[in-house]
Length: 145
Image (tube, rainbow, N blue to C red):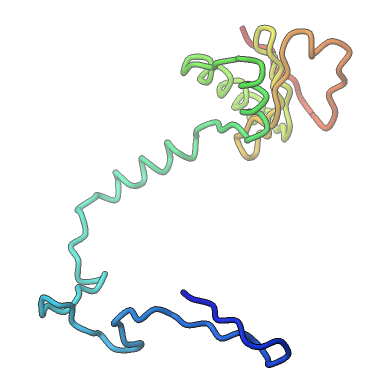
């Protein structure tokens, strides 16, 4: 795209667009002579309903980290492996079973505030950062080992 400046006070500048060879509103054949395929004409990979449902249920049941919590963990060099995440998710599910909405999860020397409804860790504190800290807007606490 090229912008051409006009004389001062002569009105808006003209914008020249590069020629693309495509006519609007018409299905123009490419150089090879074949018409482009339409998305609805392309073959769809065979996937069973059960496979899609199982994948969605597994994805929906996973505990996620908010960007804030992820940043806090990285700043403190805390790495949570699959087993850690499984235990934390179990604690959040226990809180959900009791009707909690926002829960404090204590895991070793790590404190996590979780949104039970959204299955998301909102923030994380570790060790000395937990001293003299007041946790607000929570309705439950779960301590796990």
